[in-house]
Length: 331
Image 1 (cartoon, rainbow, N blue to C red):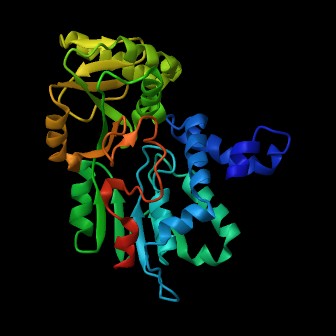
Image 2: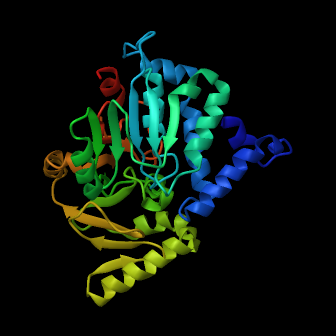
């Protein structure tokens, strides 16, 4: 994968024609999957999947030897490219077998990557399968979806060992002392994948009296996002709705800022709230962590994510804070 990222546009790129075809097909099937965003996802996995990274990650676990694999059903989301790959990887490395149900929004990339992996390691061919129908004959389930689909998952899979994920969003805490470089990096957390991922920042907290001019100046670098027609349609629609409803909003031609207590903002919109005391805000957020995937800040708190890093998770950054490997090894 790393070779493809580096060489696909060079004179040796003909070695990767099938990879390029998969990227283009994924983009045709899902209009949000631009080539740039697909390549970003692939590149991040290529950087993570080194021997040193894998060894360090797995060193805390006792991996089984010669045990009979259990079949783990994975219901994958399709909001961003390869969003289910971490679950896929955990199942295989825990010595189990994957039975994956793909999202209709991302049904090309995972099978292609899986085929590539099976070519590198033929012994995995009997441990990887995909299904378009109802999941059956599995020992445990990992399901990712919305708050609505999670109720469906609980009903059908609640009696089996499971990890069932619901909606989460990421937030950023600004102090007003951020550099332009930090605000520019925050734009990556907001705009990457058009804000569709649970690790994308959808809400910011700012101190009372916060001046938004430096914020908008830094974000101007992402102005070309509006050239994507689906994003532009959402921007125009949400802006019209807010203006007709007499909501007070700020906008710059490609991003809408709306003061709102919710964590989950629509596409092309970033919610914000004011705070008086950061300590009080932190205490409030502590009681709402079941709804939050990441907290982005200048690094004052140990578990916070630095600006610009939300879409660069490490191997031990488990969704919803649930250790997937530990779950799989305890089944």
